[in-house]
Length: 119
Image (cartoon, rainbow, N blue to C red):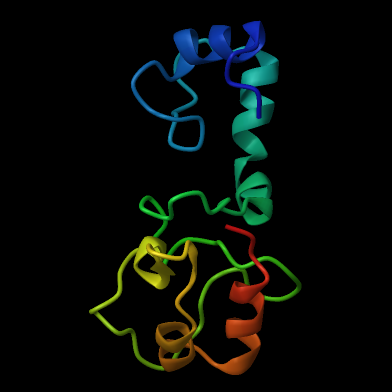
């Protein structure tokens, strides 16, 4: 996305000044283009994937952040409430994934997918 381009700024000012594009309502008197974008949001959302920067804004259990084929969300039998955001899976001293924690909370396949995400 390019939020600083003119078209994005116009749509934001007109249709969703106080939210983000995924939460915006169609509103009154929408343009054909805006109605089409709103209609395609579910399809767009299926293809969205969080990019891990600091990881503070990404929920481990609910957000789609795992690259690769299959489910982009963590799939486990039980959620460990000690860990909520992806930044808690990163070793701040080394700036690398904390492999011990990750191996404790997810299976080997998901751990490998996480380890392949560059930080």
